[in-house]
Image 1: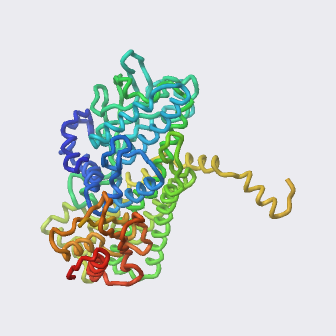
Image 2 (image 1 turned 30 degrees about the vertical axis):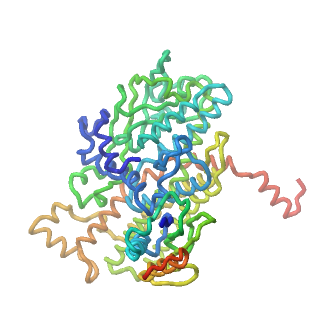
Image 3 (image 1 turned 90 degrees about the vertical axis):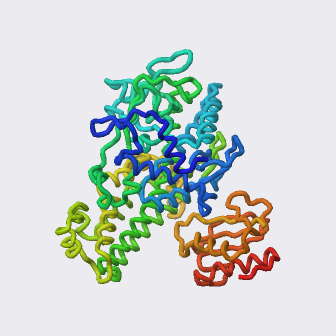
Amino acid sequence: MKTGQEYIQSLKKMKTEIYFMGEQIENILDSPYIRPHINTAAVTYDIAFEPETIDLATAVSPYTGKKINRFTHIQQDAEDMVKKSKLLRAIGQKTGTCFQRCVGWDAMNAVYSVSYEIDRKYGTKYQEKVIDFVKYIQENDYMVVGGMTDPKGDRGLPPHQQPDPDVFVHVAERRKDGIIVRGAKAHQTGAANSHEILVMPTVAMRAEDKDFAVSFAAPLDAPGVTLIFGRQTNDERKLGKLDQGNPTYGVVGGEALVIFNNVFVPWERVFMCGETEFAGMLVERFAVYHRQNYGACKAGVIDVLIGASAAMAEYNGTAKASHIRDKMIEMILMNETLHASSLAAGYESRPLPAGNYYPQTTYANITKQNITRSHYEISRLAHDIAGGLLATLPTEFDLKDPVLGPLILKYFAGAADTNTLDRIKLARLIENMTGGTSLVESMHGAGSPQAQRIGLLKNANLKQFKQMAQKICGITP
Amino acid sequence: MKVGVKFCGGCNPYIDRKKVMERVKNMLPPGKYKFEYFDWDDCAAFIAVNGCSLACVRYPASQKVIVVSGFEIEGKQYSEDSLASAVVEKLSALTGDKIAP
């Protein structure tokens, strides 16, 4: 297993081609835009060595018998699924932001399960190759990006009818030794600071979409892979410190557009190639695995937000007001409901045909559907409690000014015996955790809200419910 | 002597679990006890450190266990400062080792 420092050092060896603000970033470790996300990902490594989290953050590989970082594990039982939820909350509490590494973890579990089912139908050997890949990731303790979302172009058209086929990743050429792929994956959390990408299809497909039903793994510095790092609303803040709110770990995960421009993938790393009827299954598997997480990592992040709001109320001198206490109760109620459904999805998980465990689908969908609402509502309450200074505070550069600084501290003072600079730090933390880029991830990550609603209806036994009602009120069907 | 230690996930901790166990460690004779956080076979005792009274930590049924659950150890309330000495006392009773708290 790697420590956080060893992970950071391993990134130095990567030759990922990445652009931001019109320039190529030669060294991501020195980039103020990317470094906070690297620091956060490093926590997923260090936490595997800390006594109080070793049990949560490590597992034993079923393939090598060795102790591994849990982020590289194939889920063996319901306890693994519960530990996943608890681990993610614990890291969210430490970092206050997205730590990126669960996406690749879920992708490995999804591809592992679906490759087994493709093999069962077609006699292919995909799962052996997936296991080889998983072992490679476990042995090297690498970070993997789960590459799901294609740009999709016209959402009303299937992949094969798109005017530009590149809006979906596809096989451009089949060769004896492998395939050539072209296209892109959008919104790729952690791509800038990961080692490998595990690509999956993003929609259910029909026979004509054969070239688009492709799953493979590739190093992020493979020839032909280009990353364009995404803009965040707080980019300019990253050139300072205090105004970032969370200067060490940043906001959300750091997303990138990952472009595959005729990238060669050897057959050893191809896990699906043309089996269109399994594309939808793979999308659903990944999504359900990932939806459980949103009541875990975000619960940890929201713990930090609730704590910041409670502290802010004390700095404001309003902590004892009944309406403030009531708002704190609302925040706790929503957050613990989120975590409870994530845990339930783990406790009620069941083995898939491949043998690895899979969250209870409805509970996972509920978890994700609720975060699309609760995170926004909790943030609204945090704004309410904290006050208008969230949006109007002067910059840290004015605070450093010998004339303006004392004036800012004088006029932004709060309750007696509280430190005004600390009040400003808290305000900046709340502002950065609840504004701009930070909330959208809760809306669209692991699928937009409507996707969970479709899943909820699909899995609800309405026929049975109707019969229950009819029986009670004496209707004979 | 090998002592297994397992912490809960810490979602709702009323006590500083890490600090409690550091205090326990400091109260034990140096070098005599080895805390093990992952491999719990053949432990002389096992300490389950829970941050709250829910006590979600699972432990091997075969082990001699001390369960810390927030301010409580096996049904009895302690202050956070006195939790460590209570753990040491229980450890002494379980292992038969005379440890001066």
